[in-house]
Amino acid sequence: MPSATQAMASGGAAVVALTGCGGDASTDAGERTAVSRYQRTRTTSYGDTTCEQWQSAMANRQRFAAAADMLTAAWNKGDRGTGPPPDRLILAFVAGIGDACAVEPSMSLAEVGGGLPHGP
Image (cartoon, rainbow, N blue to C red; front, top):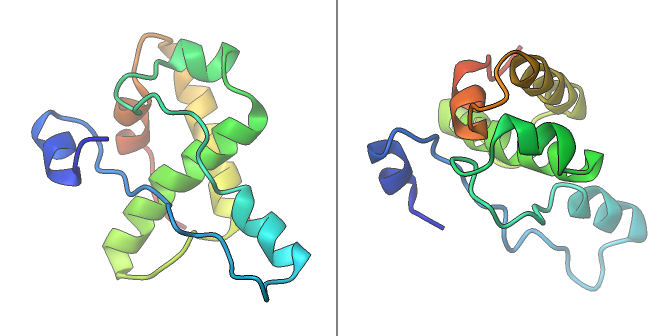
């Protein structure tokens, strides 16, 4: 995965990978489930993932995780916070990506995600 600097230099969106977010052995099952849904499983970069792939090749869970990852990077950069924003914002971001992708299926997720609002 390219660094944030490399991604920005190539015109892509800077994205923070959410690695190491699993809980420890004392974490209860509810918390483990909440964390795991933010885990990105698709290995293709956002710059190399097209809207067409977003619409047809990615499962709902993958779309949610990708949107959470992109939005978390922007959210934490803006207010120096940690962790993902509320699910309602992630779901709105998923919907925004879907709407933009319906208009231009050849755009990359990096292009779409960078052009959408990142907060309330």
